[in-house]
Structure formats: structure tokens, C-alpha cells
Length: 305
Image (cartoon, rainbow, N blue to C red; front, side, top):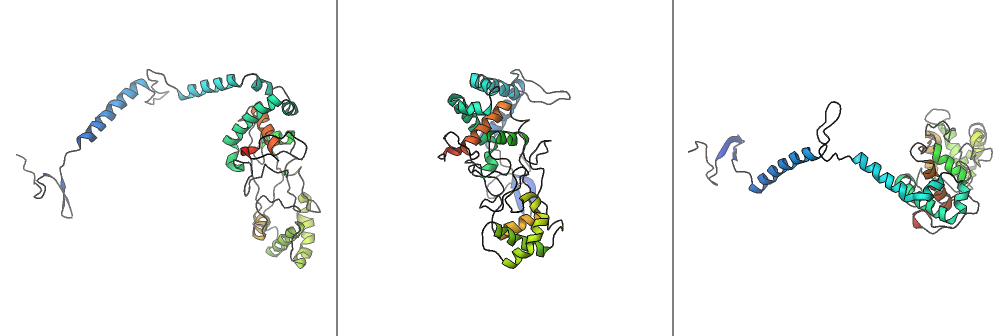
């Protein structure tokens, strides 16, 4: 007979533990839970035998199956490369213009480009390529860097924007005139009105007059004397209705004060040359510059212009 105390209500022995007058009952574990627990131990032992499991100083136990996810990925990539066949090989040797001139090759490039765009570009530019605040719209004909030609798009994909690549676009940056105390708060308020006026909207005439010389001294070197921008430097046109961060006064003031400078990664080291070509063709066919291009299914399946 056990000399442990029994609970008078349930008749179950206690463990001897007590907290604030509450005693712990010594109930057995549920049988189903015990079988699951024992089964997990057996499964783990079997897994250790068949699969990679235990780390070591110079490696790890391989298991009798010699399973390797890395090797499986390599095999799958080899299968994909073989499936792409002649079209994939041809992309390496032909020019971008030749791709768009060949309907079969272009169709293949568009399929590859759509897949790559969805996996890598849609996170910032959106599934439809329409962009968002701080992320350029790839569906229009407005370009900060270059004019939207196939070569321009390919080059941007390769080197990125302020990416650290030696040839990256965006070597010119927007100064933080307020944060770095380059201009006074009053000058920045006047400049805000000046930029509003440049885009054809009603603005404070006195502030615009005061800011004229400040714009000429501080801003015209990049945005041009008339504020029409410079695609070589990546300086936006301030006279149109296209805004990367927003067109309201607060946003314009914040941009002058803090000087946002967006970054796009370089894809040259991650993508093969033929993949970059396919992505350039895909973006160009669905957004591109202002020149004539084939009418194909647009990014995200939306109707082409």
C-alpha cells in the first residue's frame, strides 16, 4: 500500500506537491498519448538511419538513402534547362531586337519573362507592374533612366539603380536639404510651392517668386532650368503628372527635406544573360518606351495598350 495521500473527492493519489492549498493529482498519462510518444521515438530512430541527421565536425551523417535537397534542385534545374531546349539556347546568341522580330522566340521569351517577373519583380512593382508609392510604374511610358528601349531596360536590369554595381544607374542622388540643413525651413516651403507650380497647379505666387533663384541654384543642375528632368541622371520631370512618391504638398515637402533615393538591385549576378534578355523583352512588350512594339498580353494578364 502506498502511504501517499489520496484526494478525498476523486480517490486518486496525490504527488505530494501543493501550491496555495491546491494539491497535484498523480493521474496516469492517456494511453493514446503514450503510444504517440513511443511511436515518435521509433520514427526518429528510423529517420536517423535513412536520412541525413546528425552534424559532425567536418560533415554530417548521410543516411543510407544519401538524400540531398541540393542535389535534387540541381537535377530539377537540369531538367528545366533541357525542357527549354533550342529556344533557351538561341536566346544566348540573338539580339533583343531579333527576339521581338521572331514570333516563336518572342513567345518563349515572354513566358520566361513572366515567370521571372512574378517571382522576383512583382514584390516591389506589383503583380500587374503598376508599381506603388516609391516603386515605378512599368505599365506607362514614363522612365527615370533612359527612354524605355530594350537596351535601356536590359541595362537597368543588369546593373540596378544605386545598387553598388560599378555601372549602376542613379549616380546622382537627391540631397536631403532639410535634414542636412542645406536650406532653411522657409526656403523648403517656398520650393514646395515652386514644384507645385511647375506641374501646372495653383500655388502661392509670392513663394514661387522667392523660390525661383533657389531652384536655379540648387535644383536646376539635375532637374533642368525648366524642371523637365534628365533621364541620363535619373532626375524626374517635375512638370508632368507622374509622381513616384506622391504629388501632394506634404509629400513634396518631405522629399525635399529628406531626399529619398530609391534602390533597385542588380540582377546580373543572379540571372543568366538569356534570362535578363527574356525579362527585358517581357517588360518592353508590356510597358516599354514610346516606340512601336508588338501588341501582346500585358503584365499580369491585363489588356495591352
